[in-house]
Length: 151
Image 1 (cartoon, rainbow, N blue to C red):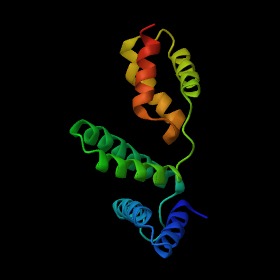
Image 2: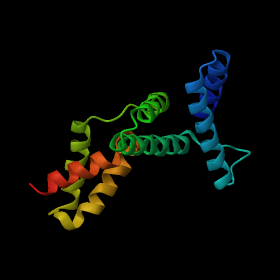
Image 3: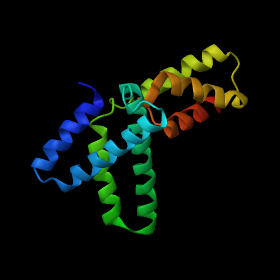
């Protein structure tokens, strides 16, 4: 079963259970996937699970940024709604990599770059992101690469 089919099935289940929060979140995800299909001219064939996973990872990142803004503005109720959406979205994403796993990827990228300094930071971040895929947050990767290169 593809990721899109799984989301559609879970949406039907949420509708039958009258779960408003999950229904709203899954409808939003379904819309994002449809937009992606239209943008890539793949409405008939659909997107691969890898592309859908990338779209969901972007949505997760948006929710995290919104939580930061809501917390700074003191809108706890809106931040809690975003947290609930994050919980729902995370069901469809691969398990996040631990910092130790990301550090191992960073060490491998630094070793392949040779004498890596802060000038190669962007290249190393790119290599690690490519290796980790959506399983690691870009901000975490950037922070860990910066720490590693400043040693």
